[in-house]
Length: 599
Image 1 (cartoon, rainbow, N blue to C red):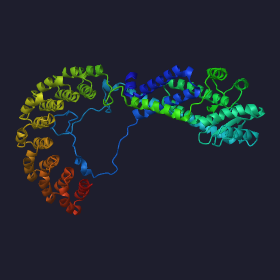
Image 2 (cartoon, rainbow, N blue to C red):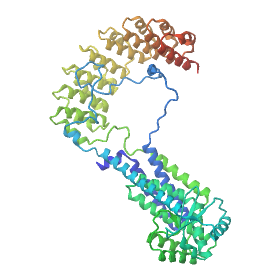
Image 3 (cartoon, rainbow, N blue to C red):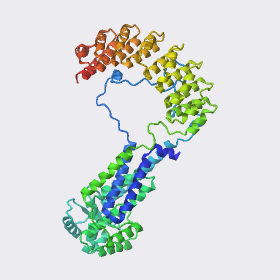
Image 4 (tube, one colour):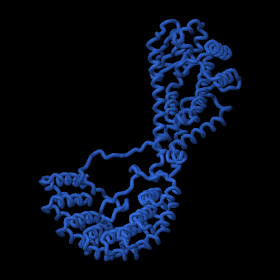
């Protein structure tokens, strides 16, 4: 179950793999690069993880800037195909809205009693992130309290600080705060940096104070507090991953070594500097209570690494230039962005289901569970579900058989087509209807002869499904079969035939469709208007313009919509009078149609 969760939330796996790649690169380059160079790679790694998280989790949805009237639901250039997404679970007519089992619907069976691990794991992650960021907030508040309880230095330390800022060409103003509540120096703030200095440090001579101030100014110069914020956000999002915490600690070592290199490049004696750090640590073995950027580290490994880097004559103390750092970061992003877009699993699947479990449920005795299992298997988009579904096609309950047929249609595995065709002989109309719909989902021309037969079925729902399926298979070589369906006694079957004829975009059918514009059945009349609007030819223009004088406001509105959909500017003059139509929906649609035709 945990593996399923990781695969369905692949940003967890991808970010971990990306970080491992960064760590391997650093392992190879460690002996040949400076700490400043390595720290840029660390920053690139954390930034890449954030990009992977953002691109994998956040869904961007483009929204129109103008809200159109409700009546414009059919105004797009291409109408979506008429999919029968959900199978009917009750013996109702073809057009009835069926009820389907929902994953959110409470059930008393064993299927729904299983724990939704994904639900709880998401909330555990959110709770962990919230706790971490609350701790950070507490630290910031403690730091603010420390600032209030301390005083700004206005003595000789500022003289040394101003001299160093001039020497290091650092223009950003920096404050120095003296406090008796801390034992080790550190710096905070990325916009207005503040150096927090223990009052006990005032006893040191100017040379040692220069060590402290240069190291802290190095953090300002390198903008380390901004990169530290990036690491903190990474820890908040990936708090459950020990690899991230380890990487943060390793990057902190390289960051401190880079600041030590800064001190050495400022012509400071590296032996005296190393000795001073060790003296401070020996004197103040307790750790500062605020996790900020500072002169000394708290870990034994960090101190050992820093001492080795300071005192080793072969160490590279050079700083990476900003152009090189920028290029290196862009290179990392060039790798991270496409990596974030690669899906480890098919994200289009509704669920990541345990196929064996639900196939087993199909063989249970509870018919509600069987229907639910068939629905889940149909939404799994996994071809392995087909054999288990086919094995239950002879189930005695017609509703279960219908659900299984729907699931096979959703899976669209051609090998199941013979079984679907066989089910068109079922004595129950509901089952035959769903078999015909699922055949249409296959869109296989080999099924045309059987679909043609089903257009003569005694049940109107089956005949309507057969007409729809013929359209899905795109059997438009001859429209005669659809012309015959226009005489069907079922209104729904005739409407479907009109819809499919319009979908064919065969201009020879225009006069046939136009005959329905005078039909007393309003449903057929409206469907014919939609179909003519699909034809996309000037030949339908006179028929649609004539509708603008109809007494029925809904017919006029549909005529306006069809003209807007058609996109022929020849309709502009005919539409202008409808700007004063007594029916508000007609006026609104006219404004929209004119906008479509003139811009």
